[in-house]
Length: 89
Image 1 (cartoon, rainbow, N blue to C red):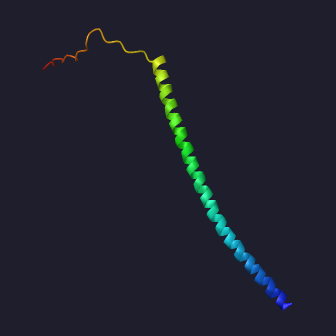
Image 2 (spheres, rainbow, N blue to C red; image 1 turned 120 degrees about the vertical axis):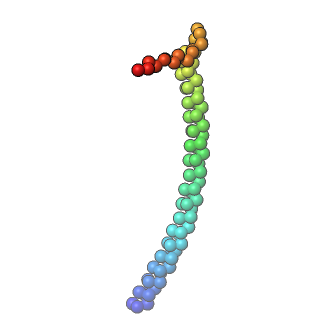
Image 3 (spheres, helix red, strand yellow; image 1 turned 90 degrees about the vertical axis):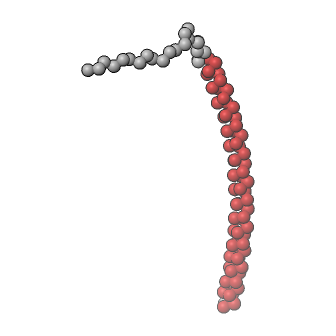
């Protein structure tokens, strides 16, 4: 009975060591997958930003063409306001 208990404890210890080693390997694999996913997400974000910048420039140009009328040149050039003489008391 004692030997069976020692054998079971030894087997449980070996299994625990294997599980810890597998968890460490899984953590490395998970970290590598997370890094790859982060890089891919960064690439997608950069692509979408570029598309958004192009779309914004196009929309701004279209807005200006449709709604902003070109300013006419004034009939005569503007002059600075004349200084008023102050009355002295």
